[in-house]
Length: 616
Image (cartoon, rainbow, N blue to C red; front, side, top):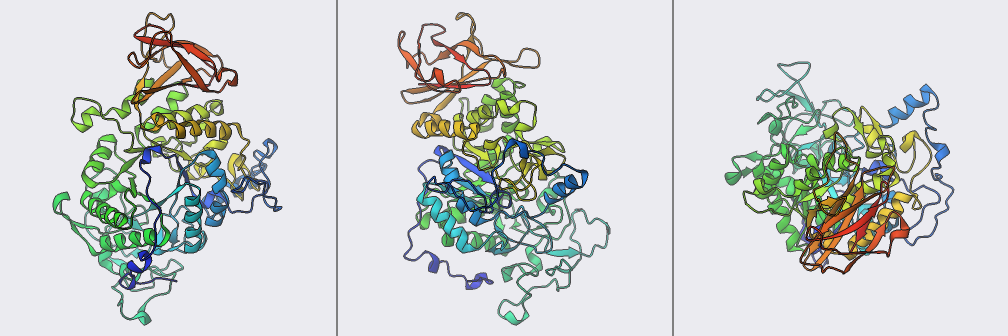
C-alpha cells in the first residue's frame, strides 16, 4: 500500500498483535557488514552458495577468475565506459541481498548495514541513496517494502540484525533556487534565497513552491514530483540558504545544503531548550514507521555533524522510546559524526545516540599500523580517551564506536581514494587489518568487498564502490563477473577468526592492552617504529574476568618474527602454558608456549610473515 500522508498513518495498526525481534544484549558482540545496495548483488550470479550452502546454477553471471582482471578497460573506449558506469545505477537490489544472506552468515556477519533504500529523485542517478524524494517508499530500482520485510525476516531467522542507513539532515534535490545574489552559485551567506519551485520528475522547477493542502489530494503533484509524504511539501520544511562552502564554519555547516541536496529545518534553540520543527516531528514519524513495518534493528544516521545537537537528542529520544514500547530495548542508533573524536564523544554524551562511526583517526591508524607505518600505541591509545571523559582513569569504549578501515567515501584520504588493497602487496596483510579490527575494542564493521581483496582506487568515490555482482562496473576493473567466492583465502580465514570471536566474550567485551615485547627476554618495551617503519610482532591482550586471550600480528611482510610478549602477571602461573588456537601458519595451531617469569609473566611466540596468531 502506498502511503502519501503522515496524518493518515496509524502506527498502532502496524504494531498491534505483532511480536518484534529483540535487540541483542550487547552490540559489541556483533560483527557489522556495510554494503552499497546498488553495488552488492542483483541475484543473477552463477555458482554462488545459497542460504543452505548449495551451489546455485542458473546460467547467470560467472564467477571471477584472475584472467578476467581488467577485462573492462582493454581499450580506451572500454575504460571510459567502465568509469562512466561507476556514477550510475548498476543494478544491485534487495532480492540480490536476500540471495546472499548465506554468504554473509558463513563469513561471520551478525549485523547488515545497508545504504539508504528510500525512493530517490527520478532525474538523477543517486544510486547511493542520499537523494530522497519519498521518505515512505523503497526505491523501485531496489525493490519494494515487501522485499525489505522479506530480507529482515530471513536475516532474523539466521541470527542477523539489519541496520538501515537514514538521512535526517536533508532531502534530495527537490526544488531549485531562483537566487537574487550569487546568481550562478547560491552559496550560504546566512540569508534565505528565493526559490523557483519544487522540481518535477524531470528536474524542472515547474511546481509551485508553496504548502500543499493535505486534505485535497486533487491538488497534489505526481508521485515522482516534488517530495513525499505530502506534509513535506511546505517551504517551511527547508532552510533554503544555499550550499555549504565552508564545511567547518558554524552555523554554515548546520544551515547549508549538501551540494544540491536540500537542508531540512529541524527547529531552533540550544540543546537544553530546543524546539522541534514540524519537519523534525515528521521525520521521527517516518522512521518509527519503518521500524513498525519492517522490524529493523537500528539506524545509521547520516551527517550528524550537520544537525543541531538539540534536534539529534529529540530524534534519538523519540526513536528509542518507540522502539522500547514494542520490545526493541536496545534499538541501535549510530551516528556519522565528523569533526574529530572530541566532537564525536561529546555528541554521544549530549544526544543519547548509542555509538559513533569511527571515521576519523581509527581507520588511518589501523590501516597504516598493519602496513607498518604507524606506531601501535597511536592506534591502541584511541580507545583510552581519559581526557575526553574528564576522568583520571581510562574508559573503555567497547560499545561506543563502530570501527572500519575501508569505506564508501574515505573523507580522510581527500582526492586520492584507495581501498586498503590498492597499495602494492597489501593483499598480503588485509587479513591482519580485518583481524585487528575484529579483535580489538569497538564494534567491527567489514566494508563489502574487503573480504575479497577489492583494490579500487582513483580520484572519485566511485572507485571505492565497485560492484560485487559484476555488471558494467565490476571490481578489479572488470565487467560481467561476480565476486561471491567463499573459497577466497581472506574470506575463509576471517570467517575462522570471527567464529573464535563469537565463542570468546573476552574478544568483544574484554579490557584491552597493547603488550610490551622483548628480543632477549630481559629488556621489554612497547613495539614501535624504527625510522619510518615498524617490522615487528605487535601483540595485544583482551581480558574479561579471569580469561586472557593474546593476539599478535606481524608487520613484516616477508619474514617471520619472534618475541617475548608480556601477559597478565596475576592471571597466570609460571610453568603453565598458553595454547595457539589460531595461526595463519596452520602448523602452529594446537602448539603450546610456556609461561615464564620475565617482566612479570611472559611467553615467547613466533608470528608468521604478514601473519596472525591467537593464544589462550
